[in-house]
Image 1 (cartoon, helix red, strand yellow):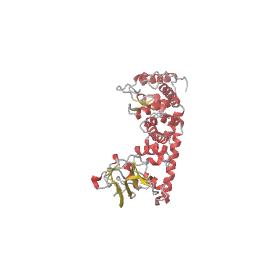
Image 2 (cartoon, rainbow, N blue to C red):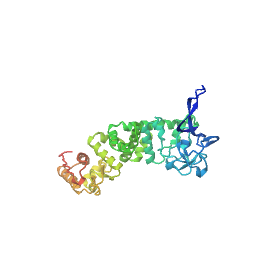
Image 3 (cartoon, rainbow, N blue to C red):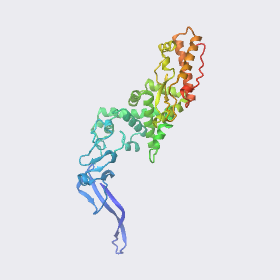
Image 4 (cartoon, helix red, strand yellow):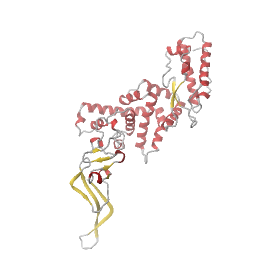
Length: 398
């Protein structure tokens, strides 16, 4: 039942003969009993004469001119809802993430447990606001669903945690519960890494929080979980990050990503700036070859590659840099002939010092030059690559 009252109070004379007001009754404007999906029960409604109050089920405004009294509720961006059918008249914008539901569904077909607001992610907001699902995990899962369409089915998750649903008692539901908790643990495994945590908190999460009105700790945790996925998927690829989200298993790319960051405090701020800039859509991010592509066919480089130097490895020989744009004079990556000349000079010096070098020595040399070049880039995050002074030191023996 939903009852609405005005701010008036109606005095009732006491029975003691004093003529004084003994108590007050509320001024009831409307009173309605509803079926679960919001249809009014026949004969169990009341509307005060001449009232202009237009709101009803779920606090939504009724448009009685369309389908009659209380049969068309305006959910804003989610369009008009017909409570007699339990369906919206247009497709859910989030339907791709809900393959096991009708695109016209209301409250995931579970109005007793869920409240429809038309703006939730794949995890209904009330679930993480009330602590049913950890908000950081919810943000992480929502981000996965937004990025990798159809990877999460909230219908199964909700039914798997609902003892009143027959699905709750099936082996499949037990597996879904296990995977959901695994995902939650995975999020904490990710966010407990101090390097990644610093990277996220100093960038995307804080930007997201600026757009949330009256944000609290749960909103911040949600934003942080959402941001964690964006960082992981950018640096290690959506495929490996998605596998990590579902299984909790750390792949080679993620392990290397976390390992490299943990060894270089300077790179944390550098990468945080990259993520922050990409989040605000100012500059594009490009992968920079520390040992330039133009030098890939030089004998020393070819020998190093044959000995195991991974020329195309992200966060190895390829690192993310901001593309330089003339429009805002921001970014560092562009054509870099002077940078390439410095690497070429180091290769020539290595060849002169080691005329009979082995392939393993070539690899050790490139590993060393790579490390020196990345250190110079990290220490000069605002200097354009072509203007960077690498000051490369070539050893006599490798």
